[in-house]
Length: 282
Image 1 (cartoon, rainbow, N blue to C red):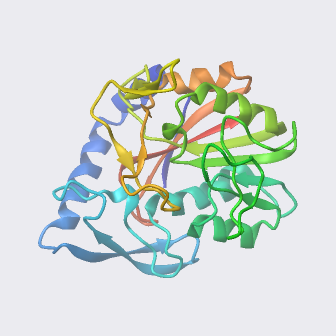
Image 2 (tube, rainbow, N blue to C red):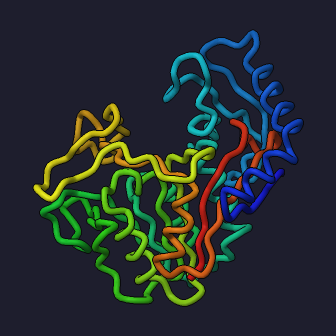
């Protein structure tokens, strides 16, 4: 598996310049995988969570209909986990050093990833965002816990790991969310997350913001992502696509280290050019 730990845009540019030929080879190879295939096909590979060779399901869901969204597909038939989520689990084991006694919080609860983590790490707590009028830490009649990233109910330094995948882009005050992540983690604790990432940009791309009057103002065409609990038929508004500035902002929140973890593997089914996840340590 090809991996790289990148801590700045300068490091990323150096990395890209050294690996131009390899990137082109990967791109061409992935194009060839789709030649002569229909709208749905399978690719053989090793599913890390399933610990077995499987036929990953590939289709054009969540794509523009022309280019496959590799990151959200390559679904393992055993675990139901796609490329991105299988990569998360792989990194949890290889990069985070978590044990069964660690206290873990993940900002999702109705997903296969939460179920997997809860079964492997008994002290895992999950949640969903259930509305601005709901008390953080409360549990509804469906046993769903409510948390909001800018006002977590956890005590200071009470967690060993905080995971948030494809959530922070929906939070206008993401700086406050970074500070909350720092607050709830113990010394040496890990913040592990993913967001829409503009890898060629330093500054974050602000798509929308909330004004002092409480109203939402759009800078770019509104972009909506799926709502896991079905609270909105339109989906959840995306406020930000993040750039390398994000790592500096995480360190400004107090974290000692923050980096992008880039990875690719045809064996494990981590396709789509460079896949990226983010890790910070308190």
